[in-house]
Amino acid sequence: METDSRVPLNQNSLGMKWKVFLSTIALLCAIFLFDRIFFFDLFFLFPNETEWDSSPWYNFIYKTKELQSSEDKHRTVVTGSSVALYSVLPDELNKKEKPNSKYSFFSHVAMAPTDLYYYKENLLSTKPNLVVYLHNFADLQWEYMKRDGESFSFDEKTWIKEFSSRYPTKTIYPTSYLKDYWNDIDRKSFSKLATKALFYVSRYRIFFWDPIVVFIDNHFRSGRKYHLYQGVLPKEGIWSKGWTKTNATIECKEQRETESIFVQNKNTKLQFLFFENQNSLINNSPIHTQIINIQKSGWLDIHWRELNLSNLPWSIVKIQILSQLPTAKQVNLIRYGKDEEVGIRLSHFFCDGIQTENRSYSRASYWDDTRFVQMSVDEFQKEYFERMIKDAGNRKELWRLHVVREAKKNVNSVEFKPWSEYNRILEISEYFYQNHIPFVIVLSPENPIEFAFYKNSNWRKEWISHLKEQLAKRGQTVIDHTEVISDVRYFFDPHHLTYEGAKIYNTIFESSINPIISKEN
Image (cartoon, rainbow, N blue to C red; front, side, top):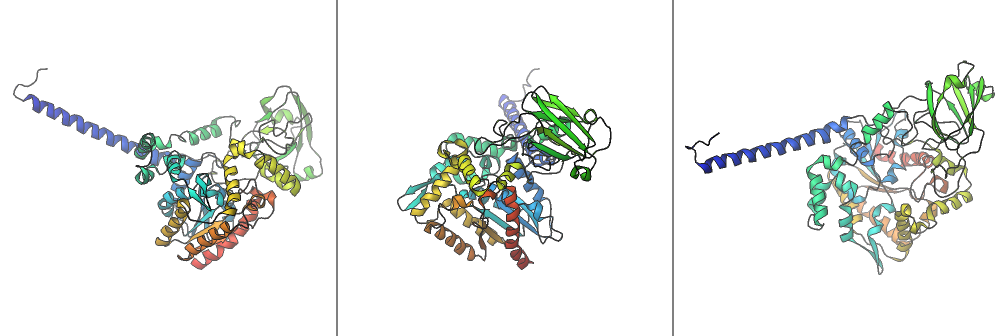
């Protein structure tokens, strides 16, 4: 095709440039719109069947959106780090016949005061009637605190650099962080945060497949791959990864034709005892007993009809291992501390239907925690030393706990001085005061073994005194629950309660918060 000679060449060129420019703008707008609609809105309409603490960033955003789109007559939002997640059981609190408030979590692992500072607008949008911040000494980012004479100094330069690469920063508040620190971070960090600020797909790609994979595993696979066991709990207890104790007595709610079990050792001999009901179990009167020898290790299917040759109706099965038992360390349930024998591993929903409700913030009781209460205090202290303290400075998984433990020792010889991470808490307090939302800080329970390192220090007294004084100016409250759980066996580590410990603390927590709720009403 020839160019029209009557149209000047530069006019033709100019028109083409405008077309390219407008097309580019239209394409970018379409990309941004698709990114916003699909990854920010539609993606979170997909059913959430992920389990307790299995996909923390996805679950946190999902929970935030769930709260933003719902309303309660009175809503108490419990916020904080994993300390909050392991201290309070909202499901139990909400079971009360006439609760005076609906308790909900706004929490994820490793939530620092700075994280909560950047979330404060999102938290306000969840329409809370009361915000309770479960706070702990360990939340104060001690890895950035350096001893400086008679006090600590905060290494803000390192903090800014490392916070720019944390998942909460990159996934949830890249824009806000860039706005505050764009001039203090390196070019590579700036580029990454800028990309994540522009596109949700860049932010959410770390967990995009999590709910999809879990949904497929739950509905279309054998139940042999999972994060936490969700089947019927054996009477004797079960480990969170589905390993039974030496025996497992199970009331089979749903009797599918086949179930899957995993055996660790070759030539494992199993005995199945079938009981009609609870009475026959109490009387030890099985309607049928079957012994099988499994020659290979690994997963295998069991067929109830082949095992119960009597064909009589049954509701309870007792599985016993008659051969050599593996141990918790052999099957990688634990690495340190007191070892013990285990039995077989059960499939995900063994003897139960698939549970499709949102369980991302629902905690259950497993033998991982329950076993501690069965020990004597002396046994637990020896086990705790092996598991949590011995050689902690050289064990990667305990590095941060070791830093916090050393900080507790160091504060005994320094004076308290506020620093930027601590001041974030005061800024959060001021924000909710300005927005007329009651705000309470609860200092969570600490393991007496570790609390003893700084219990009587002047630093701690000054820290709590300063915190109470600042919040009192706004009519807000600080509740000190550091010592309310005195039995060390109810702690998994320095500041995380076991499930049994959380059940005890639940009552203490509720009784402290109820007067504040009643005062509002």
